[in-house]
Length: 430
Image (cartoon, rainbow, N blue to C red; front, side, top):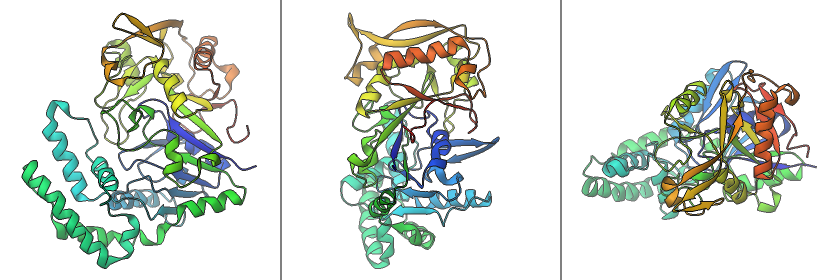
């Protein structure tokens, strides 16, 4: 029987979701992106070749797989075309295999201008956005003034509506932020120029996915960012502007929640975070530097260095709960190779009390992590593909995560390449 599997991040993003989507795509007919924009970055390594994607689903590297961008995604036409061009220059067919919801809001030049002006005005209170206009685009969506992909098909209405929206945002840019407004003619010309490359990709995504399911074919839903960047459930206000948890797969694609069969949660063997915001297990010592260097911890989208720390099970257990995670995939196990002693955060200490669970993210920066210590391993795990070949202490580390989280680990990643993976249970075969 066909399955619909959702892949989501269980930390602050950058968990390695793209690799897992690519790995599992040979089991599916379609891969669906359901939230975020080109602020996300999924790095794929196939036989040593690295490809970074921002908007197009990671399944694009598998032939004959349909790639779908759902209504929960905000789309920059220019960024999309750049990505398509990059892939096709490498011999990867895109246009014949990509479908886009007509309901996707557009990210245009004024969104970028607003994003950057706002971050500059906040100074030390900046959120740490990518500056790519994602937040303002979602704001327009909620305010019901967004221009959407489907609007490009009616040039007359699009032109008139764009004028009104540009005037609105230019007033804010000019009068509140005291920066240069955007040029209406430039926005219009650039967008209409790109329209001919997009209009044939537009489709009714909910009905398309319903048909695929009725044909008894598997579907994979690809999340961007991570659980604690969710606009509702993350470490607010240091969050993204969309729902990054598993529920977003339904609202961001038009697939009913009862048709989502399995949720695979991705977590690193340690924890990272890009940008500002609380991070209880952050390490600012030699171990933190080692993790960053060994794990090549730089953001795929912005190349910003990631903050690194020990694995936080208080956060991970919460991510499992709010996304009803069925099982885990642990990535970057090999980054821990050679560390003599490992730590896992099992609770927080705050204001004289111990908390095994924590609901108020605003006090996270004042919480002290409570750790358990486990022995590390000196053997090399990089590239191992069989569980029994992992060092004893590495298996004990994974088993402790399973024990404390209460769900199984189905997959372990031991390197960046598609092949460097231990698959204990196939989510599509369970």
